Image (cartoon, rainbow, N blue to C red; front, side, top):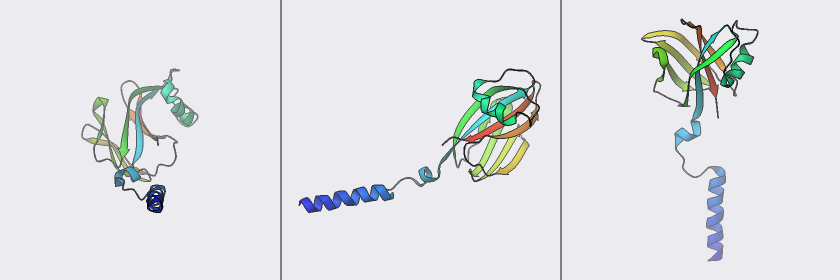
Length: 143
């Protein structure tokens, strides 16, 4: 009796260790992506949540101020559009290592690209003119 219990316990622990317990497929492949909508311009104000963007763009883009307009987190793969203010929408297709990105304003695509995201370094997309400055979309893997 004690041997049977020991064998069962060993088998359960082995299954847990080897991933033998059934899990949803989505959880295995899921990646969390953060998307920040940023207003960039001239000045000295930098939102604390955008220090990474300011450091990344210093010397390569002509912006010195960064204001966070909105931030969303989604799980990839996703088939739902990510809605932002000003009638902007981000459409994503695929996983981080093979991701199609389309940013639309109303019905017009303003950015369309294919990327491979690696690590946690931010990817800056944009250059969209607005009345207040330039709009950027900053994507980060967060898990």
